[in-house]
Length: 176
Image (cartoon, rainbow, N blue to C red):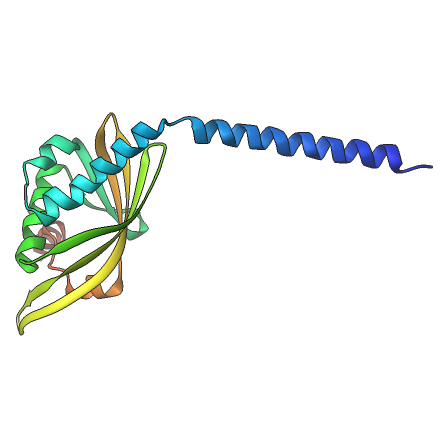
């Protein structure tokens, strides 16, 4: 019994399957026009640049959905809504009055933007000012031209140095 035709048929079937998968993946990749991806990246940059670095809190109302959700690791909700983001920006800028937030790398795909960032500033601690620098990664989800969700991954140093968020402070107060 010859294995030649059976092996050829099997290889042809595998090749067709691979090509079909590649075509589907290519369609997904082409699905979002480059102009939209660039607009999504610009929107996510405004979150960092205008709200946090420049302190222009009114921008939160313009670029965030009313039910915007800021997740922290393990998908726990940290903040909800533009007003909570404004309070977080005020707290962060109070803790780091000379804050400089740079977007080091950006990737956009469909309705998501990923930004690797570096924050530099002088933390105002109980024992005096402390210069700090650390990095993190933010993943934004865009919905109808606005930021709808943020997954914020922070380094251990940030967790130790960050001011207590308004959400954490409120939770601590309500359990006391």
